[in-house]
Structure formats: C-alpha cells, structure tokens
Figure 1: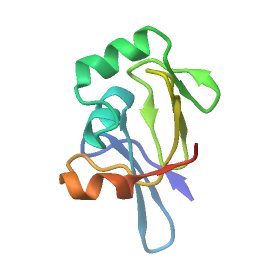
Figure 2: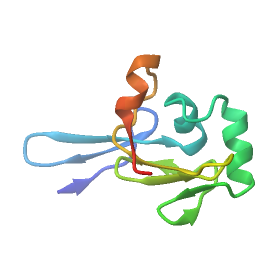
Figure 3: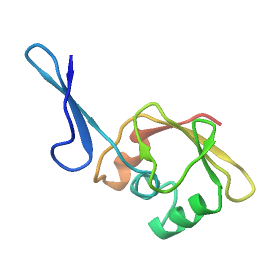
Length: 105
C-alpha cells in the first residue's frame, strides 16, 4: 500500500495493486450543515467555538475533518444528540441527509 496525497479537493487516496481507494472528508461545520443537523454553517461554527460540539470524546474545532466512523456529540438545547458518521458527501438532497449519519442517543 502506498499513501499518496490529496488530489481533487478534500480527500485522500491510497493505491493498492490495481485499484484506488478514495476517502472523502470535509470540515465539521460544513458537515453539520450539509446533513442538516444544524441549520446554518455560521451557527455550527459558533457552536464549535463555544465547545458545544465533541468529536470522538474531544472538543472539536470547526476545521476538524470529519471522516466516516466519527462519533459527533451536539450539546445544544435541552437534549444532547449523539450521531455516528456513515458517509461524507459534498452535496445532498434533503431526503438523502439522514442516510449519512446514524443517531446513537
């Protein structure tokens, strides 16, 4: 396995024998907005700055790169929300957003 750098936009790829594995990732504030967990990116950015967003047990900044498998805890409002990232995509339709995360609690 040979790790190569980033090529198109946000992502990494690895070369194996005859195929390429591409892993897409994006900023935390953008992910929260794209999957519609938080309505606006600026609100997501402010929540990260206030320490209300935790990723994998650590307080995360808005610039954190979200990857599939990450556990995100949102501590805004009366009920905290905990989700697991299933997929990361740049653009989504409203009806496809829930397919990109799994609610844990």
